[in-house]
Length: 434
Ligand code: URA
Image 1 (tube, rainbow, N blue to C red):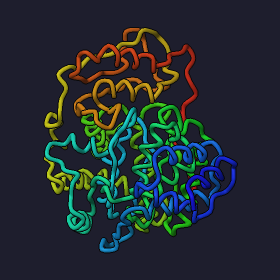
Image 2: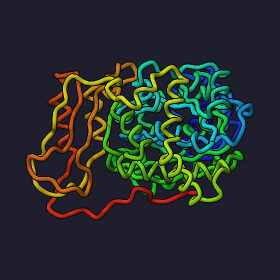
Image 3: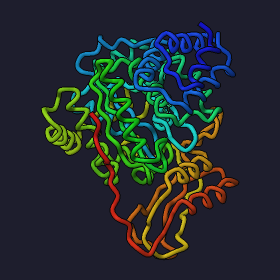
Image 4: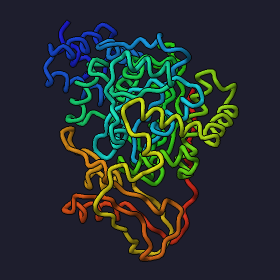
């Protein structure tokens, strides 16, 4: 078999066989296929697409390119949640302890942020002392003992995906449904969960900007998961404006803790409740969605979810007192209000531009090597549908990098579209794919 022939086949819109896909993934992850040929094949796939069977083969080959975790030593049905990423998405930080408090074993591997999107690991590292490094023994013991552990994805998981993602990132081949579905699902499947709940984001700040593409991606991932015998469900949720109010690592940790105290922003609370209820059903703890919602409310109101958060933080070396004293988290030297230049209703807040503005302040990375400022970020004071008078505060920026402030402020202000007419209320959840 020759990689040249595989590239030619895809270039000519032919369907690749399992053997051809396995050959490509295996040889590329071992360094036996050069980047220029892999790039050519990825671009051919990008332009001419893969069918469902090819995508399933690609997912399986990528999953088998590294270690496939065995979590059978953990008692109970392990349910993993995955978000396709967005701006202000701090869901795992609240939802993981909330689920653990409801009895779901949460054995989670998370990632770092890149570009305008944040990553759970960076956010957790804002907590003083918190470590995302742990041996597989400690990971499994922690989930058995306290029902929760969150660590970084080990280098040995889905080795092909790391190489392919890095290549896609620089060859304009990221936003293809088959390539995204295979990249996400190979890691989820290799991480060993019994059931998977996917939060597919849609809108300006998401990979998938349109509802049709978001549903197509959700459907593709659910089909892959189901074919691999994992109960898989996807919800489609809004990422046209940032989720909640906080964007930036330390600020998002505070918002997640507020949610565990029952005081988070409405959209964020609703998302946690929706995803959580489906996770409880998938884990067989809740009899149905409504029972799941009832259990979530109970865990929040009783304080069990907040208590679990403290236990989780402490178990991973962090200072649990952050939950009661936010000043223990990194704080920025400069806190500046951003005022509105106009009077009217907020029609749109372009999530991606807000994410980029926060990144410029230091909350995100433009390249993998960039160093984060965990205290930097933005608190939105107005969301879509709110009324503002000229001079009202739209948001508050937290930063240390003074030389970046004007650029971040300009980008941020351009993200707010203010109109005379009040916009139709937006949906948070657009649908569920099972
Ligand atoms: N997240 C992933 O893990 N892979 C993609 O291709 C896109 C988003």
